[in-house]
Image (cartoon, rainbow, N blue to C red; front, side, top):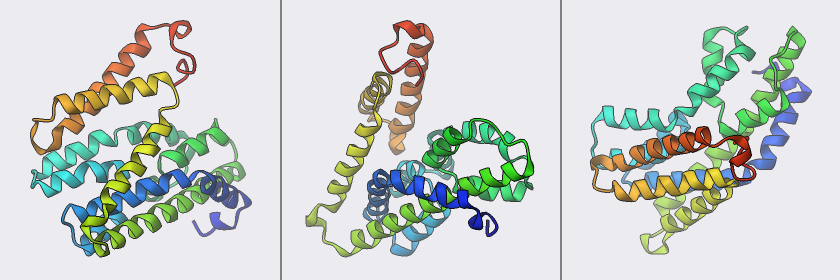
Length: 245
């Protein structure tokens, strides 16, 4: 990565990621607060933030850990929540197969949703030459490091403020509202809004499931319903803005 840091596209990736990182800060802050409010110590929360580095998986696993759920349930939940990264990895495979496996794993650990989107928008196809491959790698590392810095910074802020401020301040609820605002902003098409509504309804209907498994079930139901709707309706009949995701 040291070599990539000297490439102009490294800083281009960093700037573009910085421009869209504002929305991620609320999510990171909320995750930090949630870890502390679940009963974790500061050391445990900091360690989880640094080692897991996956906000959706952390938020799904935290209530399970607090409830004393079996390890396999926690792992299965995190896996289901992060299934999208399997798709991301398959797509990025053609871009970075020239790298040793250990370096690919290291790169994959730092690659998040937004950095993946920015990277694939800028580079729709894998590079054909060594120079182009180095440029693509530099851009992705620039975005990854900026994303990591924003996430960890605000996650740590949530951890330490969550531990220092009294319960009556309602910090956890404020973080939940901020996260809700981020989620609403992501429902930018009718199909995405439909998916969110289905997930919320399924989660409430299955609230009786143990170990917060209603969250996992809601994800499965929402994904299945959205895929079914997208496949049943031809592009011309999909609501405006949904034909391409």
